[in-house]
Length: 205
Image: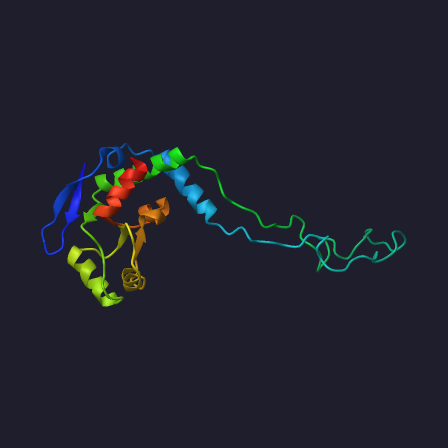
């Protein structure tokens, strides 16, 4: 499989050969969907909490006699039926994380990378480093490469590169340890460095 290679100082891109085992496999939509939902579920905080009738302060005394008042019997003013009472099915802090086997996750990532390569949305660059933390320099570099919306994947993100890119909308930079299915699918283009390609091939190959 070959993908576009952008080289510093050259306006005309060439191509680079990448592993077919990682970048040229069939697209498994079901597996990709499962990996994506698993990732998004794990990102949920799950900190929502409400008070049940046992958690609400007060209500220890029976509000009125059981019989003779003409009203429905009541044992506490903190019943969910009363104003100021607890919630019937109170939410509790919980984890939304789902289990996905390592091989299944790797298979989904191979499918995503391969589909990006087939669609021409994946390209490579020798290296991607910005010497000064200036957004202007980052915009100039991306404009020279022809990108307005792109996810940049490098083997190591230095602080200058991160700070130069962080304020540009629809542009992000991550290293190979932060690759996730949501980011890969969410960006129109993915730009990956040569060193990052080698790490991805070692990870998914």
